[in-house]
Each structure stands twice: as structure tokens, then as C-alpha cells.
Length: 195
Image (cartoon, rainbow, N blue to C red; front, side, top):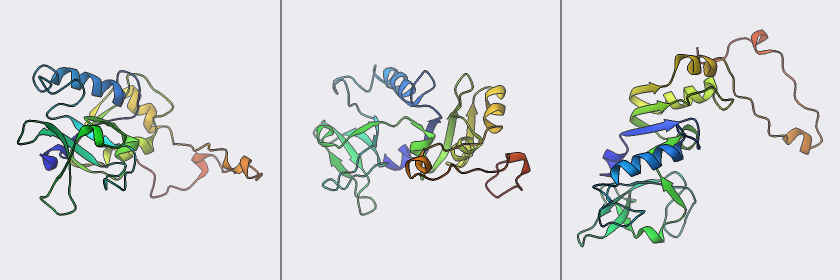
């Protein structure tokens, strides 16, 4: 079940909003509520995917670990995660887990470092400054075999025309002059350029 759960993932650029990870997870879980949630409690149900968001050395669960809620032999819903030995998953009572959230849909940011056989990349309905060619590239490269892009051509074109810029303010905090660089159209192409 854990291997099957890692085959496909819905990725999104945003955390909030109708096309954000939180909203998509809520809608997916509502669709599953009729059958899978019956008798399993309001929050944890057979088939729910979980993403650990906080390291727990005690449990040997770490930020980014993905698990699945399944019923054990007694019928109790437990959260199952990969074990240290292949084929030996570990079960936890959901109340014992460190911070976690649903993982049917994830942000591209949280999916960094992960790969899935198939990725569905959901773009927002309207352009937003979060979208960039780097974000699109990162989302695309999470797919091992197939990629399905959900969004308008206008939003995709706007995203591909924008480079991510990092404005951390670190230079100012260190009392250094702000870095300057020539306009992007004057720079030679680099391996990091997408298209």
C-alpha cells in the first residue's frame, strides 16, 4: 500500500485557495468521506495519505515522510510508514504522530526531493508571482513517467516568462550592499534555463 501511495501525486504551486494544497486535500477527503470514513472517526480514515511536517527522532519519522492510514488486524485505523527494513512497515496510532497534514495534494515546494511515477501539476486559475519557470521545472521533474499539466495556457506562459527571485533581505541584515546583476536578457544562457 505504501508503494502504491507513492506512484501518483497531485502537486500545486499554492498552499491556500481553491487550487492550493489545503483546499484540494479538503475536497478529496470530502469525496472519500462517504465510504472510507465510515466508522473511522472524523479525521483519520482508511486510505488517508499523511505527510510528516516535523522531525521526530523518537519515532524515526522526519519532515517529508509519507504514510498511509490503514486498518490493522483488529480494525483500528493506524498510520503506516516505511520501515528501516524493506517490506517491514511501521504502524503508529495517529494521535502519537508528530505534526502532519494530508498528502493527497502537496505543494511543489514540499515535493522537492521526491519523485512519483505520475504527477498532476495543478496551476492556479490566475497568474500569481509565486509562479516561475523554476517552480514549473521543479514540478515537472518530480514525474518519473508521466506529467499531466492542469491550467490555462495564459497562466503557464506567464509562469515560464518569470524567473524566481529571492528577496531574503540577508544582505541588508548583514550590513552589506544589495547584490546587483545585469538584466536577464544580457546574461548568457545557463544549464538552469528551462526553455
